[in-house]
Length: 87
Image (cartoon, rainbow, N blue to C red; front, side, top):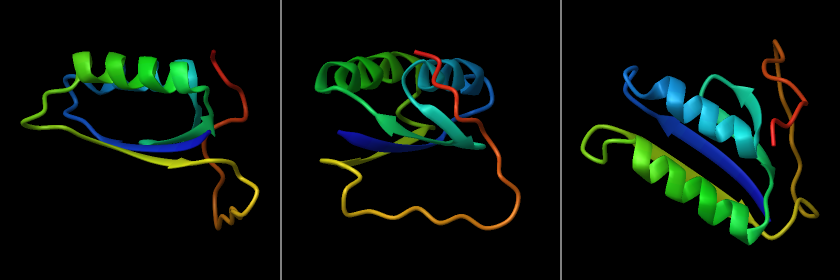
């Protein structure tokens, strides 16, 4: 499945959240990640983030798609992030 992850995490926990997300997805910009994941890795990512975030203060949103077949990605301006997956 293709996953887009967006988070808003308190600065006390953001480094851990960033490191965890980079293990599974490509960093796109600031708090946005994307990439293909297996169902097992998707569950692992969610499990690891649940252990990091404070549900009273932090927010993580997952957009999941069966594939990228019917999607299109367009960007404007400065390109941030990289094309390297840290899996």
